[in-house]
Image 1: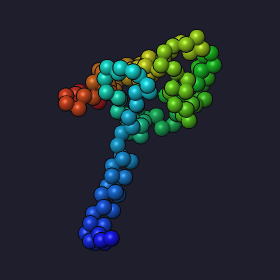
Image 2 (image 1 turned 60 degrees about the horizontal axis):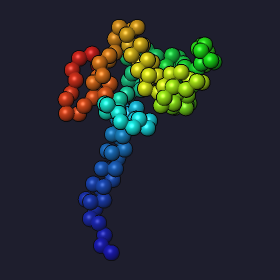
Image 3 (image 1 turned 90 degrees about the horizontal axis):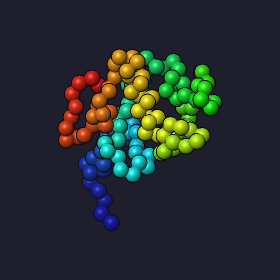
Image 4 (image 1 turned 90 degrees about the vertical axis):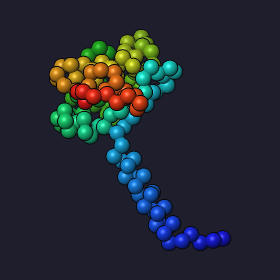
Length: 136
């Protein structure tokens, strides 16, 4: 078996470190969660950057809410759960808000109330071939 030259081993190590560092800094992708025919690409969301800009570092329950029936339980957080743990793809008797609507209600309503943040579809669901300019 041939030995790899020193330069090749070093290049592989540098490449692996670079890929690892990039993956740590890459925004989270809010995956399609089983949506059969999504109309838009997955939403890009950098959790830490968003919370810093929005000033939400103090209370995770602002976004990661918990409901008892139709009553929001103040101060209780669902941050260890996925949105799809509570919201199914389609509304059910137990949870009248489906997953797509839950995402849009939570994000867009907060952005509308705050008067800032993305509101247009392409601002959260970017099409790589057509970058969107504006309120990001």
